[in-house]
Length: 369
Image 1 (cartoon, one colour):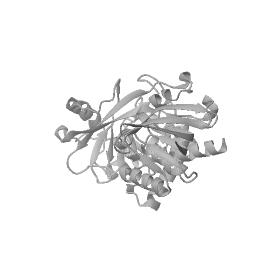
Image 2 (image 1 turned 45 degrees about the vertical axis):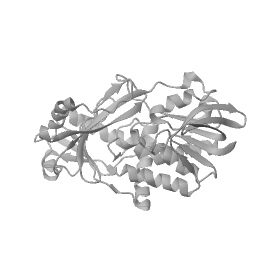
Image 3 (image 1 turned 180 degrees about the horizontal axis):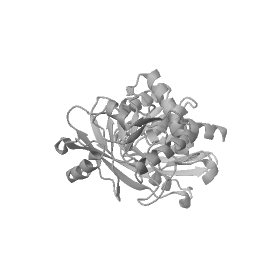
Image 4 (image 1 turned 90 degrees about the vertical axis):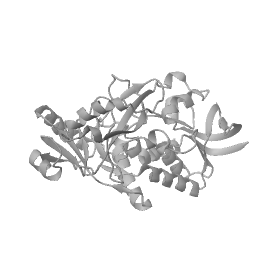
């Protein structure tokens, strides 16, 4: 029976970052992915935005790890030649109440260590984004975009170069805990495999609670309920009227239907929020009217016929449809009593931006523990 120092379940962007980090510290690290390819789910179905860390409550993991992760991610992109652009973001307001929100946002951002926000008046906005309708905006120069697939490829390459083993089409069936670690049973390409590991990292994303339920000694009361929140995206044909990312005032459980660009310059709008009971990546064409009305508030000359259904992503949220803020839930051994086990639940936005700092945080906690 093979023995590994670390087994990581889930090869999304966070799992890949964790695997790359652990493979710097340990010789035998295994990364498994139930799908055919890495990053097929939440990691490849998002806005590809590097967030600044503006909105999250002070002292939350999302605030801390987003700000740290943003800096680490830009450095990584430079070092590893990952395509990215610091386009900057305009958070726009349309009336006095929304301008009050913008002013409050400056203070929240500063508490989180984001001290580069700049006020833009309506006149200034007309100069830099003539197609934009807003009474004022905050400019975030440290917000950007990234080629997520290239980033994930790079993390996997780093992991394998450092001796790590990556296996797709493989899922965790069960894990038994004893004083030596975990005895893990896997199903890999229809073949049952057993191995042992000292450290087990559950980075299963949308399936993280199912993975935790298959860890036999894991207290059920500590496994939270995950909510599937689908966000739809519509692409916009033709040249983009914007050179920055455009964000409306955040909505409950999301950042609103914003305008973002990919590395190739394609403009897209989204996501909205729709809670689901099952995983379903449909993009109903009848949502065009909803998107048109939302976008028209800040882009009055939007043409409905240029809005085309593009893709959707599903976020593993801890908060229900009418709940307030929920932080990342990174369960360490001290919280559930199982040495060597780390569970990651509710890693939604800003999970991509925070991926490297999440990896650093977990490795530090495990090694110090």
